[in-house]
Length: 322
Ligand SMILES: Cc1cc2nc3c(=O)[nH]c(=O)nc-3n(C[C@H](O)[C@H](O)[C@H](O)COP(=O)(O)OP(=O)(O)OC[C@H]3O[C@@H](n4cnc5c(N)ncnc54)[C@H](O)[C@@H]3O)c2cc1C
Image 1 (cartoon, rainbow, N blue to C red):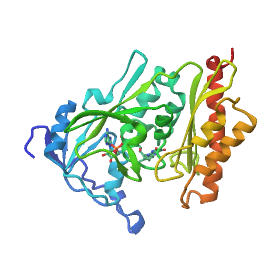
Image 2 (cartoon, rainbow, N blue to C red; image 1 turned 180 degrees about the vertical axis):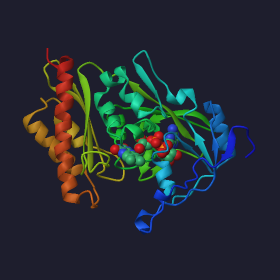
Image 3 (cartoon, rainbow, N blue to C red; image 1 turned 90 degrees about the horizontal axis):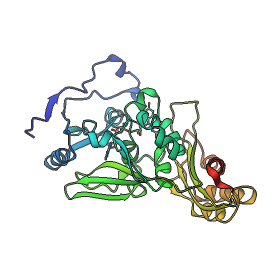
Image 4 (cartoon, rainbow, N blue to C red; image 1 turned 120 degrees about the vertical axis):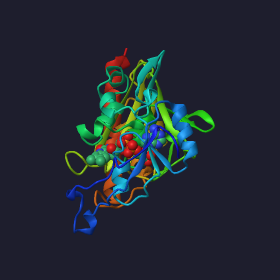
């Protein structure tokens, strides 16, 4: 590809001996020279991706580089999305927030408006990795990486986030829930990438929460993650609810049975017991070193119930009971 915006640089050449190991399970592949492109507009990025089918977008590269080191194919060109202003901007117009898909999660966590409107989604963002990881990681990468255990997708989904996608056919908007279709698989077409997310300000007496369980105190991925959003009516009864679980199936699982059990009821007692049972039953988890199937099922129920309680308490604090 002949383009002034594409440099052939050994940016990712790793010669640090700490990446070498005699242990096969610790052996990281040395990266070869890859071309690097840094478009500054969405249109430039679309053109680049259109002219080089083996190009790959990235934002923080906190998933992509470890995956390439672990043996996934190297793209011909790495397309850095972080130089595109629109992809790193947070704005609000009317009752809608727009969050650039490459915005560092650290910036999202520091955004007072987002933290007030979507406390659970911001909590989920703040759980990703460490300060260093959060200075690079993004919602776009978290969603498009399509890990079943990713922390922000359940919260994006309960808040009905929309993803604005650019590609050779122009721009289109889809529900964030429709982006990941399986582990590592998305519905994005060739040359398409997520530009930004749109989130409508929650209605009155509405709040969200996110909880996850990890085997260690930090820097691990979820055994189970649970996001909930609850709207209360003037009597403190639930008038709308959304619950979504991570790490219990190939993609995020919505729990309509739990949502239905809450409607018309106070978020307590039998209604919460029904949430727990429905959330456990909705799971289809795997057995791995982080947890057995039975353990994940049980934890999913417990976290869903607790997330609903926290979301309801927050909604109440926003004036849920007259
Ligand atoms: C030490 C460590 C700890 C971690 N802890 C957590 C954790 O606790 N929770 C968690 O959920 N994740 C965790 N992660 C994974 C990772 O940090 C997150 O998934 C992060 O949000 C990825 O964002 P990114 O911008 O770095 O993605 P990138 O690595 O840049 O991209 C990831 C994938 O998405 C694609 N992509 C990126 N941006 C876009 C876009 N705008 N449109 C379309 N495709 C795109 C890339 O091509 C790539 O396939 C951790 C990673 C590390 C290394």
